[in-house]
Image (tube, rainbow, N blue to C red; front, side):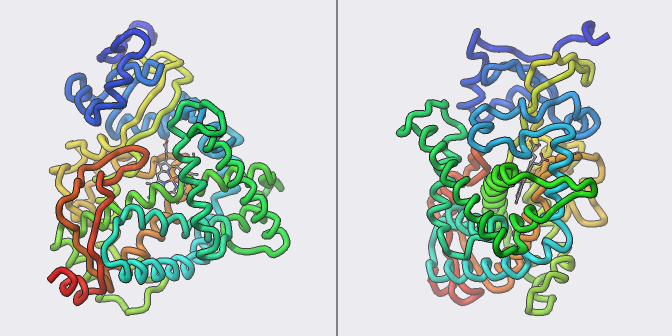
Amino acid sequence: MTSIQPLPPGSFGLPLIGESLNFLLDRNFANKRQAKYGSIFRTHILGRPTVVMVGPEANEFLLSTHMDYFSWRGGWPNTFKELLGESLFLQEGEVHRRNRRLMMPAFHGKALEGYFATMVELSQKYLQHWQRLETFTWFTEMKKFTFEVASVLLVGTQPGEQIEQLSDWFTTLTNGLFMVPIRWGWTPYGRALQARDRLLAYIETMIQQHQQTPTRDVLGLLLATEDEAGNRLSLEEIKVQTLLMLFAGHETTTSMLTSLVMALAQQPEILSQARAEQRALPAELTMAQLKQMPYLDQILKEVERCYPPVGGGFRQVEKPFVFNGYRVPAGWMALYRIDAAHRDERCYTDPQRFDPDRFSPERAEQRRYDYSLVGFGGGPRICLGLAFAQMEMKILAALLLRNYAWEILPNQDLSMRPIPTLRPASGLKVRFGAQPVSVAAASS
Ligand code: HEM
């Protein structure tokens, strides 16, 4: 049945290298191919024949209805497997379901409430620090902030303590993910392996501390969790899952927060409406208040749509399938494109425009098609840290809007770079101060 269908349109490019160079060097490669061939096309990148699938229907097919046709594990390069270990990203089937179930409670309900005070405290600490700095590059600063939140709330590191050292190890580890795996000590990959070992040793020490004095951070909850069948995560598993969460949790949030403050600075009317919403609420920020900010929710959705930190996801095709009349053989890679789906004109009116009102209850454009907003993935493997990240972003945004002002400094390149997570090329250089006096004074 499947063999009579044609392969998707497209080209496999040159022998051996396929279209890898175009993919790596031309930021518009996928957009150009999509304009030429449509929303499903074939190519040959990173050594494998690949089908690129775009749109809400493709997202639903890959992430939900036909997810067992795909392997998550096969979608990640070997460097990820070695550097990030056998963690949730790579697990599949029953093992994945069991582990996800065990990890879920640390990211929902009561557990989240327990993180609120620390997130507020760290947000205030960084806001005051930025006020003292006056001018800085926000992507770099956001990274310090999100890494400290992640280290304190995921692993139980004391605020300020060792954060810089951990962050350096992490940067070294992340730099190895996209490198040729030559493992001598002085190569980027060799250094990444050393950094991984140091981070794992640190997490092990933290596990021992938690065993002596239980705490209510994510690591503490993972150590205590048991499902109805009495399953627990082994210590080895907790170590690699914690490493994965530190990795998955801070670069992405850094990217989205940087895009948020950039978009607000660029659209003064939206910024002032967001400020008005905050000022109508009682001055002291509480957990309950986070549910009373519909306009900020709309802005965050629009940032997710326009600036998704992760542009897409690879999977390995395990079973052949037909999609839109085209046959895709087993063994190929499949790429679902988050950024392109978010610009689909069937789903979103005037998709190039930054318009938070498209998510108002009256317009609710995300309801036109399921799986049209997938900045956090979708289906049974939707981002585990979604609620954690949203809470962290909302707290920082609410405090920023209430008390601070910022402006983008001139003469910088704000074009967006997609890898490893989306960011403005310059990192977003800003002048920052208490609202409204300091910025006005500083810029006069
Ligand atoms: C703005 C912040 C974030 C964004 C945009 C984001 C985005 C994503 C996306 C797109 C996926 C699915 C990838 C795919 O389909 O290939 C994912 C999965 C995941 N994310 Fe996030 N993420 C964020 C924050 C976090 C945080 C804070 C954590 C943990 C503390 C986290 C942990 C995970 C994990 C463990 C998975 C794998 C889930 C599974 O396979 O079951 N993420 N995330």
